[in-house]
Length: 115
Image (tube, rainbow, N blue to C red; front, side, top):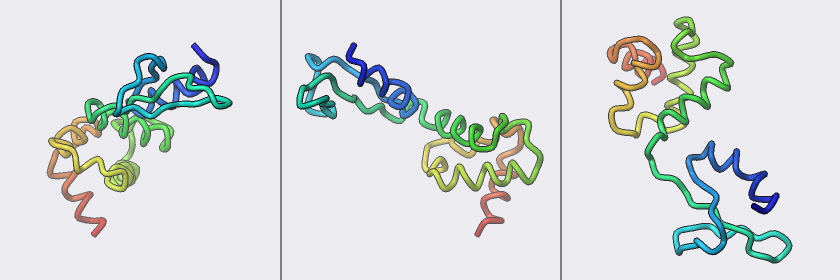
């Protein structure tokens, strides 16, 4: 695999996509060129696993698993997840409540306190 593609792989994986060989390029893929040569492509991922990726991002930002945070930090995590659009995903409130080890009611309270 081309070194450019190897370097991009961690970023692409984090975004839920994949790097593919140039020969597998389809209309929905983003061609990746290096010095004028097509060396591969980026295939965007779907929403499968999107919430988990957003939670991992917030955990990295906060420096700890969100389930072990104190109350104010959990409120901050909910605020950040809301900014990232996590609550637009189906069943996000229930799933985030599970990640945070709180009730759905608590999540709604955190969201309402931001308004």
